[in-house]
Structures are given as structure tokens and as C-alpha cells.
Image (tube, rainbow, N blue to C red; front, side):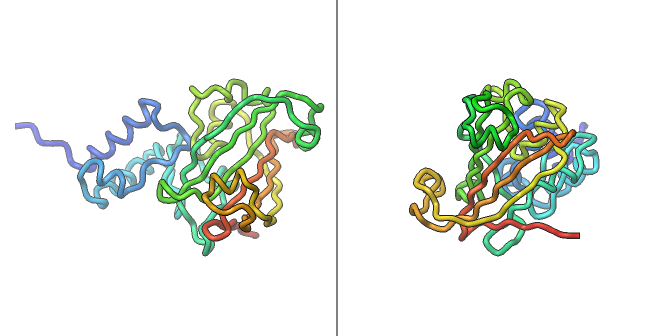
Amino acid sequence: MRRAKPLYQVVESYIIDLIDSGNLIPGDLIPSEPQIAATLDVSQGTVKKAIDNLVWQKRLYRHQGKGTYVSRIDFNNSLFRFFSYGDEKGQEVRIRKETTTRKLKPGSAKVCKQLEVPTGTELLHIERVGFVNSKTPVLVEYSWWIADVVPGLENEDIHIPDLLYALVVDKYRLPIIRAEETLTAEACDKTTATVLKIEPGTPVVVLKRTTYTTGNRVVEIRTTKGRADKFSYKTEIR
């Protein structure tokens, strides 16, 4: 008589199928442990054991407090230097991101100057919304990329993972070396307020980032606006 597969292996197969089918790619958050447990009708302990095994196999990468991501063999902690969001108390938090807009358009004089390209250069504009608990919008990202370094990314057939830089490194072989950031606060504009479900003029945390690849070349500028009552930015100085 053939023995049934152990439950943790059922969970492993479920997660691997999500990856191998392309439903999840490097940089994507996998569903939370409670979500997987509910889907497969198993205990969270069983799910944790399966995830631990896949982390050990380097199919997944666990970032403490932020969730577990689809990995590659050479995926490591370095990309998380650029991922330092938290909740309103500064605690690590699992933020899932959805891409709401992506399109090619000529850059304004201001944006092109920041990206160190001629005014009117074709750029890729990406907007993403970050959610906590799959339903509460806590931040909006507005980013501009030099289109030539991420060709085709405007195509909605290309899935953008939660950790965008993982796709940039994996698909486009574009190293993300460092970023410069400025943290401020401002009154929320009407467009962002609608997305975040707050009143216009409500205080928001604003993080402005300039991202560099090798040769000190700027490849992205990004503005992240987060709800001050549900979002914080955390960094570590050594």
C-alpha cells in the first residue's frame, strides 16, 4: 500500500507549483502562512516546516518581519537594503504591492535632469500601491526609469514582483548598487489621497529616492508617499 505524501510535502509542492508555473517570480511575496494553511486546510506549523525546507533549498528567502519571497540560488540579503518600510510604530511589516500604472512617456525637464538624460527622453513611469493585510493601502510609489535599461517593462505581460529590484537584477542583469534618499512630510495631494483612502491635505510621509547602477549611473527616481498613521521608514546606521 502506497503511503500518502506527508502534509508538509503537499505544501512544498503547492508553493513550488506557484513558482514553476510563473504565478510567482523572484522577488514576489508568497502568500502568508495563515493564507496557505487555510487554502490547503493544514496547520500553520505544517506550512512553516514546508517554508523552512524551501528556504534551506534556497527556493525561498525569508526576510524577518517582512515576509517570505521567491528566491534564486544567488538571491541574498543585499536587495533588502532598499526595503526599509514599517508600520506606524516602526515595526517590520509585510507589505504587498500592486502595480496600478505603467507607461512610456517623455520625461519632463525636472525628471530628466534628475535621471541625467536629455529633456524629452522616453521614460517608463510606474505607479504601485502597497497594502497591509491585503486590503489596507498604506503607500503609493511613483517611479521613473530610463526606458532603455528596462526594455519591455511597460508590457503588462511582464509581472512586476513585490520587490521590483529583484526583477531588474534577474531579467535585465542591471545591478542595483546604491540609493540616495530624502525623508520629508507634506500634505497629501488629491490623487494620492484617493488611493490611500484619506482626506486631501492629510499629512503623509514622503521618501524621495535616486537609484544607481554601476558607473554611478542613475537609473531610477522614486517618490513614495505613505500614510503617517500606518507607515514609517526605518534605517540602520553602522
